[in-house]
Each structure stands twice: as structure tokens, then as C-alpha cells.
Length: 152
Image 1: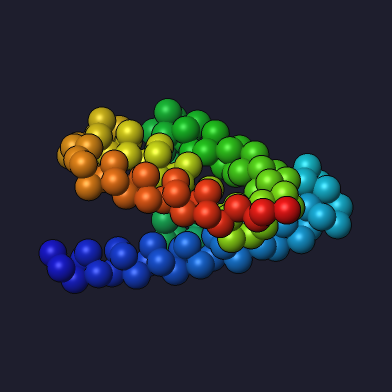
Image 2: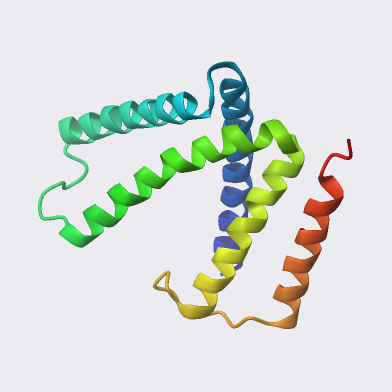
């Protein structure tokens, strides 16, 4: 159990680093060519990467692509569509907040929704109750966003 928790935490940390790197690149792109074109090109790159991965798995026959449950396929395609809006939002918002405060605000938004998902069990896992420690963590994160915002 502790190894799984450690591996999960380290993977989440690396994923956070990747998200912040992508946010920085999206911010730069948004400043140069605008947020909408940045969102489209970033997700086109994601789609091309996914296509290459799909082709490799089909060639090696490592993944079964037939008989996927249709509701799941549509849910995941919608999730990918949200990615376009996410990149547009990042490339738009970070120019005003800076990368640090903007990333902190993004993380706060993720924490707020994740708390609801955890509490209701919407992720398919056992519900995790909202405790005073979790609320305090959200409040501290909210204060962190406030403190990180640039004062001009």
C-alpha cells in the first residue's frame, strides 16, 4: 500500500511538472499567435502523438481496439475536446496572472472539482469524505493564489 501511494504521488508530481511545462509553452504560444490558435495547434500535436501511439499498438497488437464500450468512447472524446478549451484558457489567462499565480489558480480549480468528485465517488472509487483538513487545505491554496497574484 505504501509503495503504491509513493509511486502514485511521484507520478502525480511528474505530471504536475509536465502540466506546468505545457502551460508555460502555451502561454508563450498564446502571446505570439493568440490563445485560440495555440489551443488548436497544441491539441493537433496531441492528436498526432495519439495517432502514432495507436498505430504502434495496432502494429504490435498490444491493445484491443474492438468492442470498446460506446459510452466510454464518447466520454473520452469529450474529455479530449475539453483539452482544447483548457489550452486556450491557459494561454489566455497566464499572460495576465503570470505562470506561477496562473498555475496555482489552475491547481485550485482542479482541487475544488476533485474534492467534489472524491466526496461523491464520481470517479468510481470509494467516496472520500470532506473533512476539516481538506477544507483547510483548499483555503490555504486559495490564500496562496491570492498571495501569488502580481501587484501592479
